[in-house]
Image 1: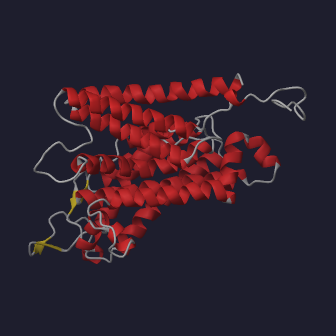
Image 2 (image 1 turned 30 degrees about the horizontal axis):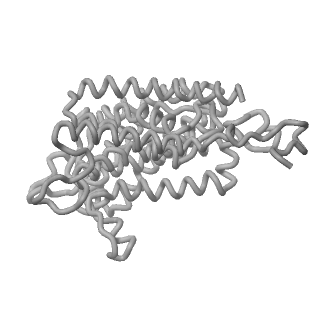
Image 3 (image 1 turned 90 degrees about the vertical axis):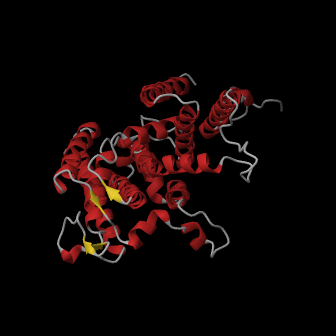
Amino acid sequence: MSQGTHGLGGLKYDPAKKARPPELNVLVALVVITIIFEVLNRLNGTSFLFNLRDNVPGLFNQQRIDIMLLQVSITGIIALGVTQVIILGGIDLSSGSVVGATAMIVMSFAQTALVNGNPNPKAVLGEWAMDLPVLAPILVGLACGLFAGMINGLLIAYTRIPPFIATLGMMVSARGVARWWSNGQPVSFPTESYAGLANGDLLGTLTFGLLHWPGQNPAVVFALLTVLFQVVMIRTVYGKRTYAIGSNEAAARMSGIAVDRHKVLVYMIAGALAAVAAILLTSKNLTAQAGMGVMYELDAIAMAVIGGVSLSGGRGSMVGTVLGAAIFSVIISGFTSIRLDAYYQEMVKGVIIVGAVVLDQWRQRSRARG
């Protein structure tokens, strides 16, 4: 048989109409954008990714690549949680503010008692909260994220408040907590063990010294979490239920899925990932400020949508989100490399966010047309 028709009611299978994986399209876009910035830099006598200096070893511009990875890792971790929420059919506008509130609280439990032999001038809590084991601030931070996510999930699942409104309320409230916690003052001077969470060499530890990547712990954590949640979303009941609810909530309820309870779980995981981002961010910067995390939620949503996650729910992957995050990082770093002023970068970022939503709507209409 030629392009066979049996079992298809006379319809023919046309290989030309087979849709490519959305991740492949995103990867192609990433390569094209990178090439464009490389060409623009070459016109100015420099290079975007490659090392042109004779006195510096290595093929690539390692400093720029490290900066790009750090830029994308913190927000990328948040985007992994936001991706799950969007696949569920929801939205989370609170993740950036949860980062800010968690950062202030967690740093208060990570402070050292003495700074240069004198009492810590930025101490927020009493002596009982000084020089605690590094596990203490980590657990406090995760508890903050889980609590914020639980509130979001409960409001959405059991009061039927639209996710936009529920998470908008949490966004405002969490930012208020961040500013109230220390009267708007920065919280600084963490213990060495806490500072090592982001500034150490996690990759070297995991590979028993075979590979080293000092100072890039956020990127290593981002990579590990991406692999973990990619497997979870594809291979576990949790992932299958998340996709099912996002595709058709009514059908998911009829099939016996505890939809409301699952929504709470997904939002709690998203909150926990925002807390992980806050822990790594404060460890990297050695300080916490109430303004941390501003606009992170919009960047995370844009990364997910650029990576092929559908705002209508039911479609998307962690790999796509990582590629979307890479595009975001390349664009921001690329504009910096060609010396585009920061306020122009913000304008372009806004265009990217709107463009990502327009792209998602175009994809939806294309699928609807067959």
